[in-house]
Image (cartoon, rainbow over all chains, first blue to last red; front, top):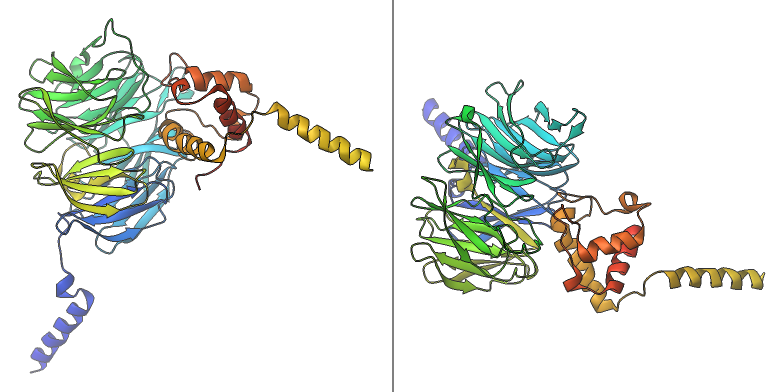
Length: 391
Length: 108
């Protein structure tokens, strides 16, 4: 009898903590960066609606996020060096630190224990404990005579508790082995090319590619064989053509792969580049509407969705890779900044900064299936990133 | 005393005349939006810098307005700074320079 009462009491107490009706997973959640107001709108891709807004994240004029390995927490990297851990279920800030003056992005380690932030000012990478955001190590991106510090771009997580990133001013790629996150071990690749502006790692974690702004070409590093050094790919892809002005830097994060083909934005040319990932030779180019910013693969890999830099940023084009043709053009609103697919590809979320709207499309029919108001939305980052290599 | 007031008024209007004529309100709003949002993709929405250098008054102090105007209109070779001549007049570029040097207005 005593036992029964105790059990009953325990059940009541437990359910008071977490009402059964509110128990839920995080696999269908995500966030939308509201860049002007320093907040993130939390979204649910099952209901295709927002369920909360979390404010107080500082300057999010350029921001991105990665997720804890259980999808519970988002780590949001703000422009002003703010690193904020957002509890996706309680819809509130769990921890926050301002770790630098100006930062560009970050990644979470393979084991989920370390957050790495890439900074412009002071140039370098800083490592933090993902549980508490306590600092673990500082990696200054020094070059030249050792007093200069480079802006860091294109940071990616690599298998083996490593982070890989590029030094914009120095023209270098560094691998930081963070098996002991208080004492990271750096491998430097010098003289890789002029002004690497962003980087990506392939979904299998093997290849790191840095895009160059100062030269027509990209840099490839095989993480299975880093001792072989870097190699130039798609070298001089725009040779002999007039280079067009670039009003927004392309982003390489949305690695688009269909079979052995990958699609990358060209720089200063209104086209996307197709590369054969077996040989790393150019396999073609497709003329598009403007300077591409993101080229994102629709899950399944048959189609690639592309958005564009100012002043062509009201348009999204959909490329069919087998036929290398543009099969659809959308006008989702003014200043389209980002696109994100749900992991199985039945929805694509697209943000329109100047129309203060996020639109959700059915990629099969191109029909709009939902519309959410948002304050100057930019990045849309779903919790499925928790389970992917590179983020 | 009135003479002094008139003199200082005169000096004020002189220094105003040196600055570019401000564009009309609607156009000004467009330019503010362009600087904050589109220039902001490299220089930061707060203009504290990003891949591009900061454009706040302290960072621009001592830099001649003419050369800043030329950079806006024609870009800066060897860097990602593109030419913006397609999108604004010389007067508007000068107004942006003057406004940046004073502390750029926010979007309403």
